[in-house]
Length: 194
Image (cartoon, rainbow, N blue to C red; front, side):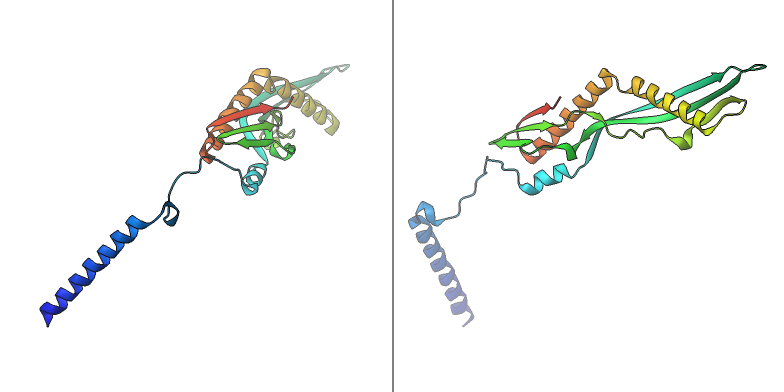
């Protein structure tokens, strides 16, 4: 009984194999599963929204240290106020400023029209790190505020240079191109609004 049982199993397996080969040979092209790659890339609304949700995308930070002083001439002596201010200018793109149609895709190509690279936060001076350098005489809060505004303007002049803005734009192109290529686009065209 053991040998006949084994022989029956073998005959059943051979029969199933013959039926499978016969069936596969007689199948038409439409009757089987075909695997292939879809070369068309369609960005989904979710992908587009996730890019917009990045918010402020920083591409360059510029750390600055500014010594600012003022002198008030007096009858007997002069009063002097000097402070050292520290700040970090963050240059990048505010993705909330994207306009409708900012991204268009066709095949393996994508074109993006992005807001101009600029300063992301105008409140860039680190008040906690501000140090008095020299102080003589009595000074009002308005005087200290004027000194702060002077340091702020000076940091903007030194940090928002064409070279720094160009470097931030180059970094933006590189990072956004890498992101689009990771999604599957081979050709990436990026324009910045003026």
